[in-house]
View (tube, rainbow, N blue to C red):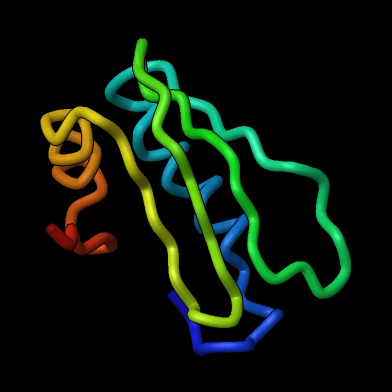
Length: 89
């Protein structure tokens, strides 16, 4: 997501948009720490229905990761987000 070391990548806004899309399927929310200037990595959680998914974003790698012990949950999230998300095994 974005270019490596591009601290202007609006990943927080992108996550909020993802939550908006997911909220059409099940109650969803995002929890992230407060913004810090030049933050490199951010960890938080995404609530999707009754499931919590770990969220990790790193500016230096331009890397967004959603992880869960449940592959089914991740596939469901990916199916709702459509072409805006690619799933890596």
